[in-house]
Length: 161
Image 1 (cartoon, rainbow, N blue to C red):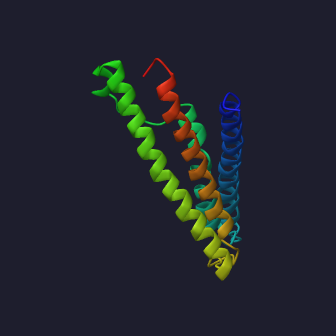
Image 2: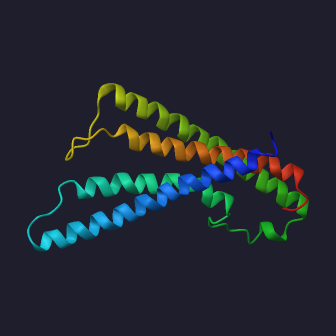
Image 3: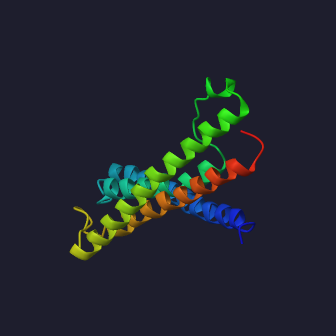
């Protein structure tokens, strides 16, 4: 089971990343359509609201894939000069602390999404429920937490920093 876990993590991260890419495309199309229609005095109501929601989906759902690809910004000027064992320890500590923080973000977003659904919270302009977008953020944070936990344990199995 553990040998298949990396494949399942990578596959789910890739699926979430494709959803994030679709949300970027939707943001672009919606913004362009709104700008063009404003020229004819027919703006799309709620564009600002939807772009904000789609932006949250984009950022949160792309986190896991970015972490797997190590596509984030890393400042390792000093750490790269450390001995291999110390580099691994710093990387493990970073992965552990990040997993805890994103685990807490997942838990809080999940709680907030369920609370928002229960009270029937809707957006101001479009009057659409906001809990699916909060839930999307929770899914993104949860998937990153899983990736970071896997990376934390993988640092102890690998020979490289």
